[in-house]
Image 1: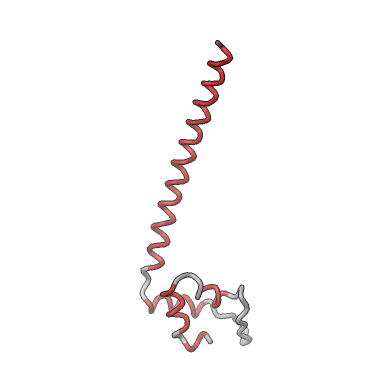
Image 2: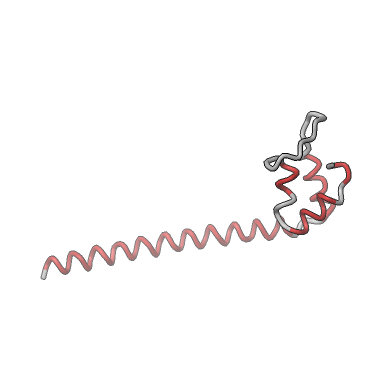
Length: 90
């Protein structure tokens, strides 16, 4: 009987730990959602300025898949449209 109580206590302890971890993850997700939604709501003019700062410092523009400008076009449709509509980037 005491072995069963030990197992139940262990399961209850694990359950409490999982609930705490779930709460932390939920809080983190909510924080990130607020951050992301703020970024998506940036006006086109602000996004344009951010994109300009992503230009490489040297004059050799590369359209490699891992370059900032190419990556920016993959965030969402709005960001792609803003980036593509900026001749200075290309």
